[in-house]
Image 1 (tube, rainbow, N blue to C red):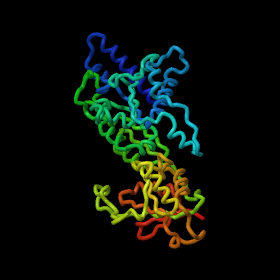
Image 2 (image 1 turned 90 degrees about the vertical axis):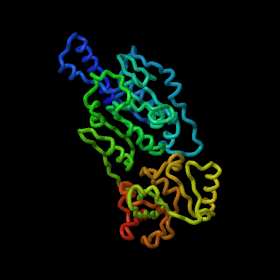
Image 3 (image 1 turned 30 degrees about the vertical axis):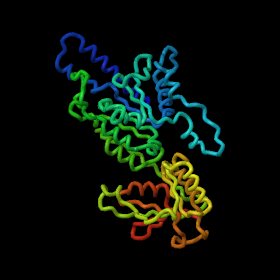
Image 4 (image 1 turned 45 degrees about the horizontal axis):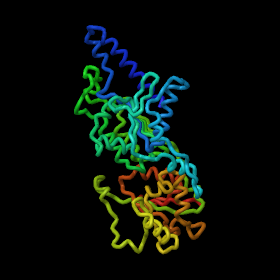
Length: 398
């Protein structure tokens, strides 16, 4: 946050200094060229947050960074901002939940918002018009609605972004990742209308090279193949990029009830056909029940009851449903909870991989190599490769 504020203030000081030089009568041609210090539009910093409560924290940090303990500083429209973004006191949970889960679902978790912020001397202007803002603070859904949605087509607002921040990308992954891909496809495109003084616009924007001068900062609690894809496609800064790859010791040894999980890889002729690949089952109702995010509560309760009383042997749970009802297996600490909660252990305490019936079977195409790497990092070294490298067993130690 301090980096973004420093960038805005230095850019604003440069614009003011060049404006003073240009206002002194006749100016030479080289001074006009050196005074190119702006983009097509004013917003230069984009901050994406999943919920309003996260945006509230961002604004509070901005106030502390800009004003410090200055009592004369003021924030415009602060009362309105408090009423729309501040979280209510957290409720009392009847059941025992972990602190991470409480933090996720409590507070103001509205995921559709957008806010323009302008920084001036001793004043922080909230709810400023986007064309007059320095920072666009919004959710992926809120920004997409004005870029390519029902609320308008204002793609020129992100044509001159110099710092793009994606905060808590792991939560956005469970919302709708397509919003981010659409937002970044509109970024740094040539606007159809230009209201800025073209003589003050930087040459890189005119030449369509602004994407090579933009910083993309993505923060998440874990790595994911979609994060890497977004960074590799849109982080094109001429100075390069840095992707952290923290080591993971695995989590299967922390599961109290030993289990065996099998991942099967099937071949696809090309990547464009991957989403169309299907596993055909003639009649599925007698074999399993399912819990997913679009199912009504009555259907969820019935599915869990049938599985609990062993009327159905298989319960299919989508990752997004489990995330908002108790976290997905993308994260190592929830992989432990999910396996411990969902799956029984083997009949024999000590046995080879041939004697253990696989409890969890997941199909993966050959194009999911990065996803397989993430799964191996979560599971650790307890892996048995069988069947010509197309089947992988992950066995928790006994």
